[in-house]
Length: 237
Image 1 (cartoon, one colour):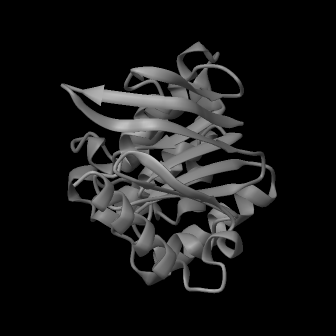
Image 2 (cartoon, one colour):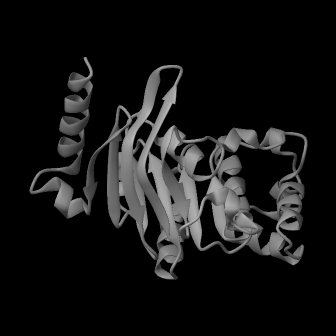
């Protein structure tokens, strides 16, 4: 469903991604984990056509995102909750998104219920939203088309404990219905509880990938992660 094949990206002589390769299968939640600045957002931007790889390829359904017919109906994305127009209401934001991918307006109400935004909240302008409300609205926007693939960058950022639990249940349910979820975060503990597989990245390189059991090998996953990222830091020092 998603495949990165030997993706590298160089910005002004600085290598942000270095030979990144991994895949996400159907019905799988894959946690894409790494410290801030590790290259996670760059990789997701390349996958969704917002940046161009220096070499290699990133595909969805075997094709570049830009080559998909009506990609918003098949691939839901949350890359930047701060990109929402502050002068529009939440309902207007979702209505415009639905119109762009050819959905009826009735879908807006369904999505608002799904992400837990009340009618009163939906009719407020986004500029007055908390970060958690913005995250819920962005997740709703990503789910408008009932996508087969979800690409989410730090989706639990700004959510309270109840919101984080809601997100886990939502993502697990989507994956169980066949949706492929690629979920980036620097919060190891939260992603560990929902992901089927993990891809660990540091300094733009894939450090390890596999299930939680495969990566921990009798230790806590946090210990494994800290050791791998420390080794990555030393290798470029």
